[in-house]
Image 1 (tube, helix red, strand yellow):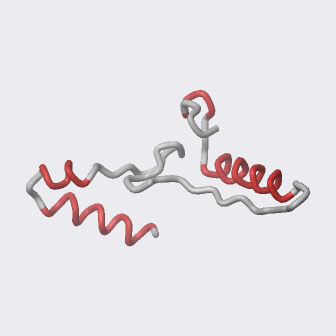
Image 2: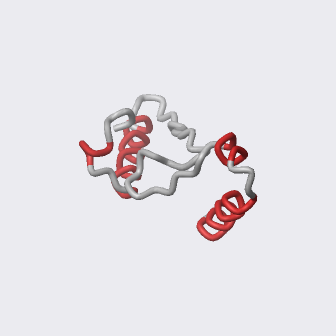
Length: 81
């Protein structure tokens, strides 16, 4: 799934959770049963999940020369974290 264009998959959060759970199940079923650590670099939002919130890069926020977009982003993160 990772690297596959989202429009080909209709990827929802539940699909992403199922994918990671399948990976974990596979790694735990090996002879040594070592769990997998799965991570995503999603500093600005998770663009692989359908309808996820994406934030601009810091340089883009700074280029606005306005506190308002940064404040709105912080409020959104605080309300949804």
